[in-house]
Every structure is written in structure tokens, then in C-alpha cells.
Length: 321
Image (cartoon, rainbow, N blue to C red; front, side):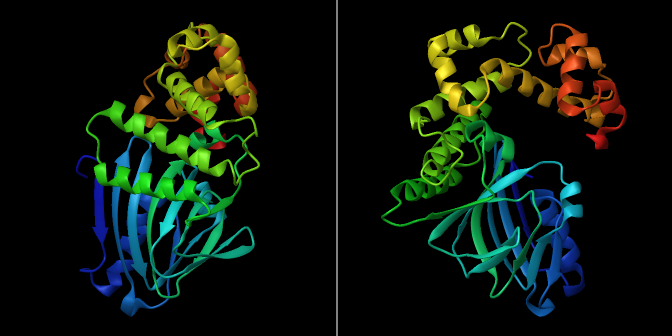
């Protein structure tokens, strides 16, 4: 790994080693999957991945195998994510929730990768894509659909702009400064939400691109400042240079109040801290303070209300919530 860049290829491996190597390689990026060779004589794969904040940009090409994700694979995944894909090679067939469709050049696709699916290789598959954590999308689009198909033609100029932006951003990676990567991540997510507005029931009609952009910046600010105990709609509005009433209007289509969002993000952060083995030395009380709760008892009640178990139980049995 070099400044967030990862490359791998099976082209110089013996036949017997390719499947295991490629399964491990894709698994590190894609999560737990099943690879089914269709022709071992032409089984090949190569990938180049570049990380930008929480996003992962990938150029992938492979031949001679199908890829599946089972319910067991999903149980072994650490993170839920969507893939924004721009195929540029031969068509690739997928079955997602008993619906079969073909990924082909000339379209962009946003696909949920945290549900079972099967894919079928005909003549191989070449794609450029971006892995996006589901929560980042849900912060902008409360009700996400399983898949979106975005034609890249003159009738859908927004999608073409998105493709150009993603490609240009990839060409500039990696960023060496975290604030630059975060800024570009927010811009990509806001542009994607702007494009999906015409293709989704999950974006309110009053959720303009300006509000989406404001909400994205505010959500990012909240995530980066969870330890501030006194964070409130008033302090956020002041920091963002907007009125409290406008702040509430920005979040109205989101379906949650600003206070609810702050608490939910604090609990999500606490869940990650509780289940990280290298942080086992942190007490539950320390974690409560670290994510911005004033009183450990309030933290314990809120955590149990959301996740169905106490923070202490979550640490002892991390796989049960």
C-alpha cells in the first residue's frame, strides 16, 4: 500500500493459485464473496484501488469467473456499502433480489452490495467504480433503493457531469491532506444526491441541491466534532453561518431532527469504539465522554434503546448486535 494505492493482478500466477489469490484480493476491498471459475484457462483479474477519505476508487478487469455474495458472506462483512459503477467493457449480468439485469457501457449504476446477489461472466467485465459506505449515502438520501440505473446520454446531462467529475477526481488521487480528501468526498456525494433526485423516491421534492449540499457539510461537521458535549442546533447554526430555523428546514426532508442526528451519530461512533479490539483498554465511561455524552448513565440508556443491549454487553459480545 502506497499512500492509499493498492494494485494486484493474477496474470503472472500459476493456474492453481489464481482463485484463492483473487478471492482474498477482492475480499479485502469488496468484502466476503464467492468466486466460481467458468474457465480456468482464461481466469484472470487485475485491480487498482485508491482511497480518498471514506471512498474507494477502483479500476477492475476480470475474466473466466462468476462472483456471488451469499447471506453467509454478508454476515461476515464489516461494512455495508454501495458501488457507483461505470462499466466500459462487455456486458455483465447480475441477479439482485430475484431481478436479473445487465450492466453495460453507456450507463452508470448505483448498486447495493450488502444483499445477496449473483453475477455471470460472459466475456469478462471491465469497470471503473467507487465504493461508498451506505451510511454516507443515507445521510443524504434517507430512503435508499436497491439499485439505480443512470443513462449517460444527452437526456441525462447530470449523470454525465457526475461521470466526468468522478473520473477527474480519480485522476487527482491520492490527496495527501485529509481536509482535501474530505472536501472532495462531500462534493462527490452531494453531486450524486443531486443526480439521484430525478431517479429516487427517497429525496423529498423540497430537498434542493443547495439544501443537500448544506446538509452534507453539516453532517460532516457533526461527525468530526462528536466529542463536543455542548454541540446543539444553536452551536451548529452559528458555526455554519446560518439561522437555526434554516438549519431545521435543511433537515426536515431527512426525517430526523438535528438533535436526533447528533445522538444517533454519537451512538454509531460508540458502537465502533466498543467493538474495536485495539481499544479494549478504554472503559465504557471513557467512550461515553469521547463521543460527547455528559453522563455515562444517559449513554447506557440511549445505547440500549438503539441497539437492544448495554454498552458493556456490546463489548463482551460484539457479534450479537
